[in-house]
Amino acid sequence: MSHQSEIWIADFGKVKTTKEALELAKKQEITYAPGSQSFYVSSDYWILQYLIEKKPYFQALQSYVLQPLVIQHTFVNNNNESFIRTHAVLPKEAAVYAYKNNNYLVSDMPFGSTGYTAGGVHTFITDMAKISQTVDKGEFLIPAT
Figure 1 (tube, rainbow, N blue to C red):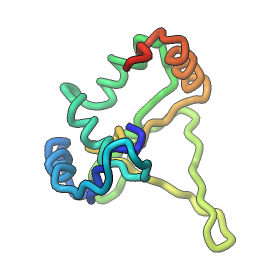
Figure 2 (figure 1 turned 180 degrees about the horizontal axis):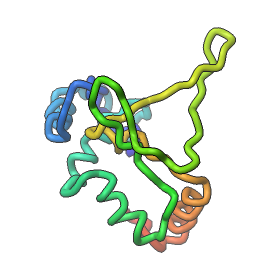
Figure 3 (figure 1 turned 90 degrees about the horizontal axis):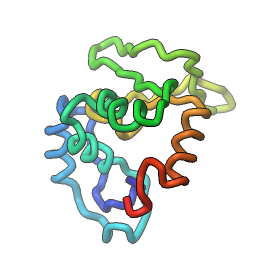
Figure 4 (figure 1 turned 90 degrees about the vertical axis):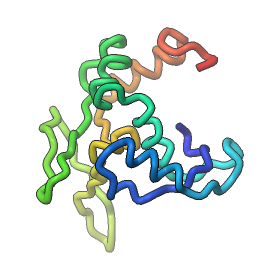
């Protein structure tokens, strides 16, 4: 999950299910030996979501990570797939800005239901710190994991 799988990025915006995303990822070019390079593509995350989704991604995240660690301020934006894009209200959500042509613009990278593992998770810094400390202490994942 560190952009080192070798699997080139696909146009995942066209898929409607995680199974379709997996099948599309399987058709992508292998561009280098796994682990030998790091290149920002995210096919890995669509494959991961297919593998873990015995239940919807955010429910799996809550069950396996957030609840055991008592993480209470982390959310997924749950974008819908309709013509007018909406998502759940996230407590204290900050706007994301981009700087282009000497102007700040509201920027958004929407992640649909088949690609939440590639992004779309919103969290508070305190939750990030708690997860990091727990992992560093070996209290959640063992070092071999």
